[in-house]
Amino acid sequence: MVILASPKTLSPAGADWKARFRWHPSAHLNRFLMIRTPGGSRIELFEYASSEMVREQPHEDDAGATHIAFRGQDIDRSIAVLKARGLRILNDPITLDDGTRWFYFLTPWNSQIELVFPPATPARDTH
Image (cartoon, rainbow, N blue to C red; front, side, top):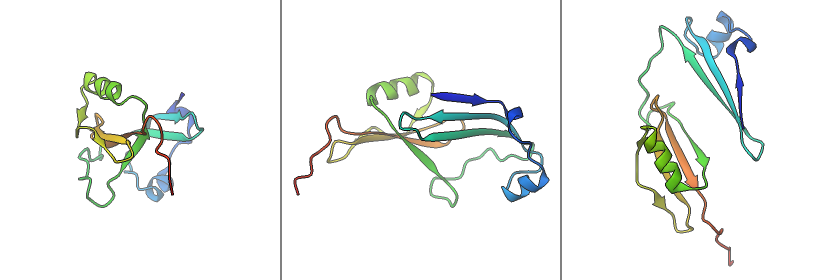
């Protein structure tokens, strides 16, 4: 489930807030999106704008670089949808010994996201 919130419903960020959270002085929040997962977890996504904003992403092995992983259900459909939307798939799906499959793609703003697909039937621990 996706919950949209207007930036106007959030408290305005003053100079103290911006300094504490390392925002540029000219920054403002354009959009806020919250995704609620079936298990109850919530993922908050923020879009900022600033005349001082650096648009180049760090390399994935640089300090401060991050990626996020989401669990998926249908790897072939996921790849097809991402490609249809013009997103860059970084690797062919990799399958682990337990049947888990995963791949990475880049968002339109060049963040790296991993999609992980558990095996159809979980492996049983025989120990």
